[in-house]
Image (cartoon, helix red, strand yellow):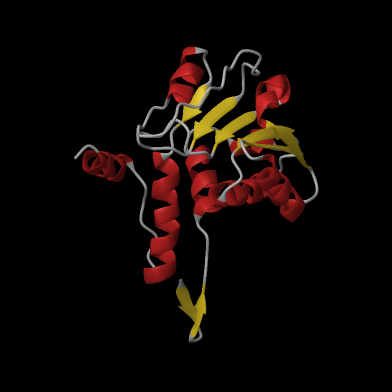
Length: 188
C-alpha cells in the first residue's frame, strides 16, 4: 500500500518482478507472438499472466491442479487464454516458448512438481517462482536439457525493488551483491 494524495493505493509488484527478472536472462522481446504455459492459478499466476500479456505473448496456456481455479483466472483475463487439465500439461510442450511454475510444488516442504520436459522446444525458457530451494528439480532438469532456467529469487528481488521505489521514491539496483546478501539470509 502506498499513499497518493492522501488515499491508500494497493499495488501488486509480482508482474513487474517476474518480467524484470526474466529480462536479466533473456531478451524478452523474443516472446512476442509466443506461447507461455503457466502452472498454477493463484495470485502470482494472475500477475504473471498479466505480465505475459503485456510482454506480447499471443497465447497463454493455464494449467492448475484444480481446474476450476484455472477456469476462473482465464475468465478474468479473457482473450488469448486457454485452460488445460493438469494431467495434460505435458501435451503442449512442443508449442511452448516459456514455461512458468507458479505453484508451491517443488518448494522445500512441499510435494515435488512432476513435469517431464521431453518435447519442450529446445529454445524454450523455464522459470520457477520458487526460491527455496533456489534450484528446483524443474530448473535442474531444464538446465540439463540445455534450456535457459530462471530461478524465483530474481522475481523476489525485482518486486521488492518496485515496492521500495513506491514507498520511498528511490529505485534500488538489483545486482550480484544484493542477490548474494539475500541468498546468505536464506541459508540461515
